[in-house]
Structure formats: C-alpha cells, structure tokens
Image: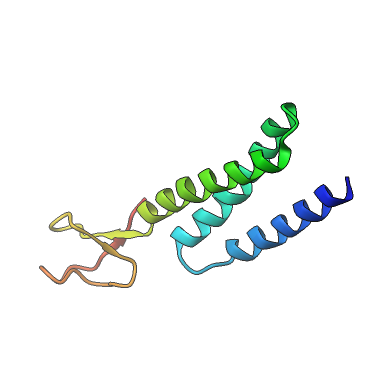
Length: 102
C-alpha cells in the first residue's frame, strides 16, 4: 500500500511540474499523462494491475495530449489561411498579423 502511495505521489509531482511548461504541446502532454495515469490505474486496479494500467494510461495520455496541444499551438493567417507556429507574429507571405487558433 505504501509503495503505491509513494509512486502515485511522485507521479503527481512529476505531472504537475510538466503542466507549467511554456507551450500548449508540452502542457497537453503533461495533462494527458496525468489523466491517463489516473484512468489507467483505476481500470487496472479492477484486474489487479494498477501499476501497469497507470503506465499504459500515462503513455497513451502523453501521446494524445501532445497531439491535441500541438494542434492548438498554431496561429492562423486571416488573409491566406496558412498555419504557422506560435513563434511567428506576421505571415511571411502577405505580412498580415497572425491570430491564435481557437
């Protein structure tokens, strides 16, 4: 019981430290890992394998959260419709100011 508590506590600390990252991709991966580990542990506990379920859930959550965050980490050009990374402020093709993707 104590081993599971310590593992859960360290997992929570690790995931919360990732949530404060700079990009939406990194934040999405951190939140996905936390949510996936929690759900995986709950599902795995039903079959007696909470640790394995947490690990599998965290892996799936990192991938899913990272992909969603990467999609949200873009800016759109209102003139030509192209998408660019958040580091750009103006469209290199027509000079229009880029807007955050909703």
